[in-house]
Amino acid sequence: MPNSMDAVSDRDFIAEYLFDAALLGVHLSRLAEDIILYATPAYGFLRIGEQYATGSSLMPQKRNPDALEVARSKAARLMGHVVTLLAALKGTPSTYNKDLQEDKEPLFDAARTLDLLLPLMAGVVQSLEPDPERMRTALDPAMLATDLADYLVARGVPFRQAHAVVGRAVQLAEARGAPLAALDLADLQALSSAFDADVRDVFDFDRAVARRNAPGGVAPEAVAAQIKQAHAWLAEAEALSGAPPA
Image 1 (tube, helix red, strand yellow):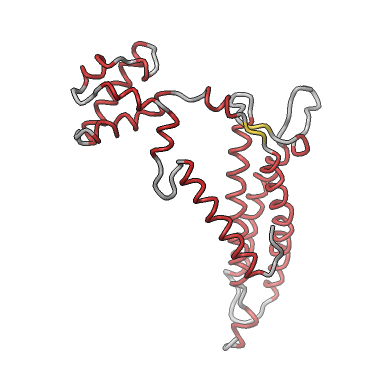
Image 2 (cartoon, helix red, strand yellow):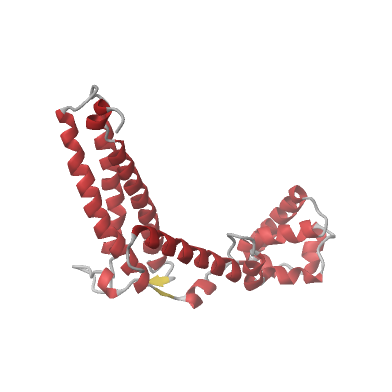
């Protein structure tokens, strides 16, 4: 290093590693929470592999997502390591001080924690069994209210007006205790003359997904492009690191 006083006291590289580890832990925690939520009986969209769930000491029917709960809690541990190091650094004067001995424990523990978390989460994801039919059954036509507003925009209605019209349509459906898609053409035309018979196409979930085909969207071809890009990025990262391909 160009400055010897800085050389013996600089711990920025450890602070940056710990921040990256903490941020990775936060992302893994969020993924764990998504999986925990969608695997609950209330949703039932996913089933976690037996090897990553445990039974209950009281209720034999339970499948506790213990691996994911541990992964979620580890984010707090990693975040704490960042604070630990920064707190140790904040009061140290120039050059080396014994306070800097406190850099080892958070650094090594963060590395060990990620060595545990990354294979664990990869294994959980590989073990997941989705239930597409359960997911499709949970779809509510009200989820397509924005699509209904987009339909009006495509027919020349300003979005602020389309938003208000669809809001009234949602209120009408709720007042009747019926889904939004149950409103007939006469009901919709009473709210806006821009509605026509082809409005029925709006309530097709497959078409709604396919319309989101911009880069980064959720249409099948857009998702396929994102997966392809992710594989290319991983291959490049592995080539740079010298690690064998995953």
